[in-house]
Length: 453
Image (cartoon, rainbow, N blue to C red; front, side):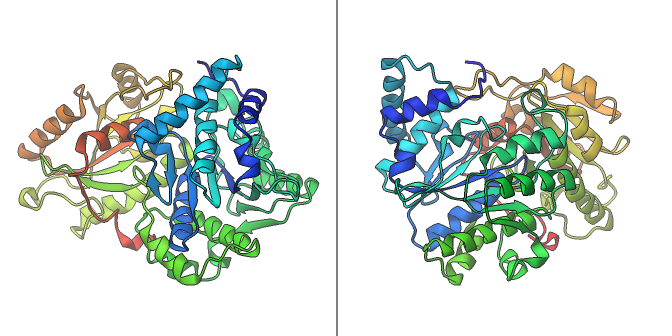
């Protein structure tokens, strides 16, 4: 089913389900282009450490369809997920509501939160804000015991232009659509001036408390950040948004002691974002990152600059290699990339910010189409390769499967190519990697701790 942004269908469906999102639990609603998932990952871990029963809804799913829903930081079991999802689908069919796949998924999450008696639901916007299915959420009032008690807006950049607009101003207007009357909102204070202007105006109009989060102005942030396993300099701002949301929740009578904040930050995991993995079969170490838009590519590029410098200087590299294969005479400053991208994404922006023409190799790959998301298609490897050739001299077509890709990379290593390996682009490529490597993969420290994460 095609993407059709509106709220009428899901509102009618949720009414048939008893409006769980309004009557049973409070919610935190978070929008943004990048950083939503990390911010909610921090929040979920902190709230779980505080013994607050918490639900979390994020998209897209990463490994299996049900992992978009978590209770107390644990993926909701597939059998129970399917039971609720099927019940939601029956209501949709019975009343001929015509809900989209994402609307059905959102309603399923909201119903699961009711059935699991969560106290607080953490909800990530799927696409945009104003007309995203999640935005059926309403403010908490005396009339309804549930509802939204805080909103968050992370970093906004250019993405999904065909739906949201081609300028930061257009996109910000849609993202700010989650701001609700009287509900406090936290925004990443490092956003572009035009983004902050939109958020300020909407918050003023809706009579909301507005907090502009900045890492340097968030008490205790860097002490907490030193406990985090997530890497990338941008995590300071994501954590700043999360900690400011914690402050709002405390004022809403949620008991969140400082010790739970420390414990939660230290326990936070968010796969597929600057994540270092070791393949159990080949022993190869790779850096995995779902940098699928320009702003994310800029952040990845900055992180890779550090890796290149470490490799060149012979210091501890953020992407460790198989120690048995290190050869000081090899070209260690270059990188090997395996890249797949969703069709329509600005792939050229990825290569522009992360690659170097004469030292790097790019393998153009594809990904497995995600379950129940028929609108998501990937660039063909040939098309992606043709784009990459504008930025990198050595461009190759990747083998078809993940296991074959690792076999090829291992052959390169045995032939003397000891460059670090980066797998990036679509989160659906990250999904393929994580599914193939499985639980046996070694989750080594997620990058260098010198990045401030």
